[in-house]
Length: 361
Image (cartoon, rainbow, N blue to C red; front, side, top):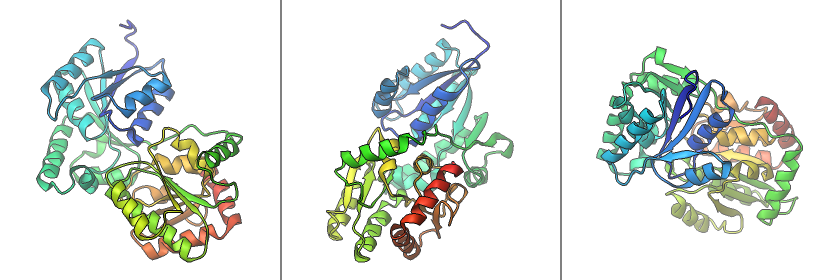
């Protein structure tokens, strides 16, 4: 064990099964936090996409080995890991990561709990519990009770800060830290664009809209598919690339068939290279009705892509409507589709918005 006691030791706790924005956030922290001051440990509940991504990046990780919901062995293994590695801070993420990471910290009094809240659970509990309302209430209750032991909470927007404070989090414990990404060089953008177009057999002239998003109800991906129908009706040939996976995938595929968009819509599934793929789009669309500070928008803007989104979370802070894209009234499908058609018929405007998007990031 490292004998240097001057560094703060942080265990980033994540569920581990699915790669998501939370995991990308952790990877960024591990890569860019000052190694002379902080020692980062990636701590997962299960093997899965996150451990695979960590291996690809050469990042060491520990798997606590959750075998079933509420597995008591997981708490004890995490507690032992905290003690053996002199962990100062358990940095918890995701509902499961919060649950196990917090309980293990309570069993290890020398470890403080800091949670990064990536989304307001009350608004998206349906994505997790579905129609099991009692289960959803129990999840929210345990999350709130265990959070009382937190030393601090980190959020990426004032909107989310107000949400968690309305749920009882003290103002002095809530802190805003915006998400950040590595800015790709200007020379990388055309290379990524060409590579994406080649990978999906899109010509360089083809108009392509798309998103990188989880396929769950709150992400409202059906709005993007209906947007393709609006473009087709307006006589605008295009492709619609949907990067991501989730429980809504079968319903979304059915909608594509119902609307006769099999030639326009391409489901790419989960992709480790999603960040570079967005460079091949002409317009990045974030159709979410509930969101915080999504990496997808940041990464698209960094790649000089204009953005179309709804007014939710920090979208209006990120996207300057009329300058880097358009922020539509929450849930206003008519405005959303009108702006989509408008952007896809004005090449120069897209280019201008894209340049200004990168400057904004």
